[in-house]
Image (cartoon, rainbow, N blue to C red; front, side, top):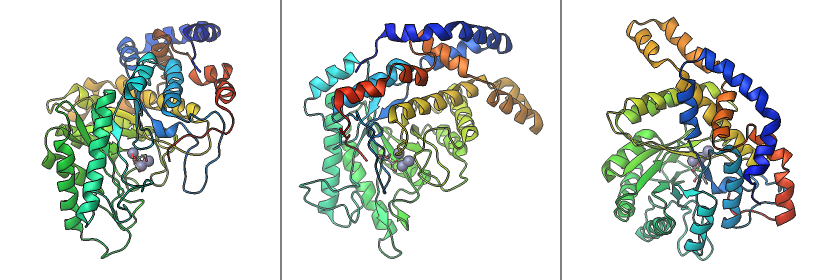
Length: 423
Ligand code: AOS
Ligand code: ZN
Ligand code: ZN
Ligand code: ZN
């Protein structure tokens, strides 16, 4: 299934007049609108390969038909999202769910769809068929060196797959931890993890980055070896310049000030990447922006400030979605997540940074709040639509997805019963 430019142009026709009117009135109100449109039109977010099938919860999956049953089809799905949104030109792969049997063919397929390979993900949180040692009691932290070696070898292999595809980074998320007090020696687990990571790091090509994801609980409920950004930061610092912390929005205890963490990491040039999602309780992995859009906006405020005041040389973070649930059509869901991310970004770009700075220097708390909330309350739908339009994307991607009957087409092509590898 591939959507072509003409179909989108035809779809856009009906919405064009109203869109242009909205744009004119918005441009009158905001002076930097062109810049914002430009930034958003160049912005891309990587799609997680594991979010394209029926989403996983521990309790049930409900198929919806036309799921991608191999990597080629996953790429095609991302191609659809990208053609409509013009903001999803990359995929983040998970090994072994997405082993590229023929890397050259996969690369060519991705290229034909305009898709790049963002961070590779390793998986030492599940036992795979035929695997010699179990990860039941951890992987990189394990008390048994043989298990650690196996997990290290897997990560090296993931890097090799990534090299073959042209990826430039590896994300490591570990389920390692303990369910009961006394089960594991915290310090030994940390040291084992560090020495395992060092071996993996040594295998990293010089133009690659290593992202270390943290998480306070789940699947382990008493302790997680890499529980927070401080632990991730310590490990990254010990490894070297190519290692960074990765922030997943769902990996914090309730009410954690994530924007503050983002700012702190950027001060030291240590923010490597993002997993966007939203949550009410824990690692809910809901679509981005559905629960706490203001928090997301405040995070983007720090990101915008950090990218514009970058004395610490923080690299441009890797932007990735990590969301998955079992209700919506995942393609529509991912489009909604992309829109939410870009909405927060566009609003943050509208913040009058100079005025904010002077309010801060004058300790004018009321004015500072007004500046932030003025930007947050601006309707930026038109900005997003214009950014897409300039790249031949759809003015309204969800509506286009429905009008073009993409899901029906996919079901026709792949059948009702096809299922995707993943969670
Ligand atoms: C798990 O909670 C993490 O968010 C990881 O990023 C994980 O690799 C991903 O959710 C796929 O399982
Ligand atoms: Zn994640
Ligand atoms: Zn997670
Ligand atoms: Zn999550």
